[in-house]
Length: 80
Image 1 (tube, one colour):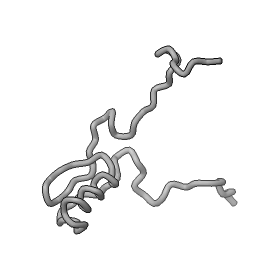
Image 2: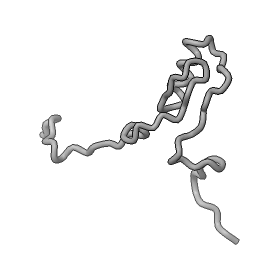
Image 3: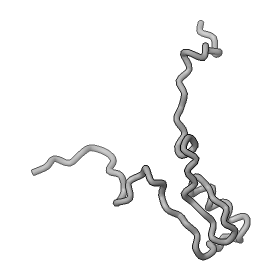
């Protein structure tokens, strides 16, 4: 039986989105706080601003994600 404690050399490190680069691409326009994800900004606006999005709020996707349309999922279409 394998132990649940594994040596450090066997553990697989997970790369966290935006955390390694410190990118904060979501900003509240009311109080200038910045966040790494849209859900974090959404909760801030809901709790601190009564659910009303202040003007100049930045809700852009991070730079490493595609900006044109949704990401295609599922089976690729055949090209005619």
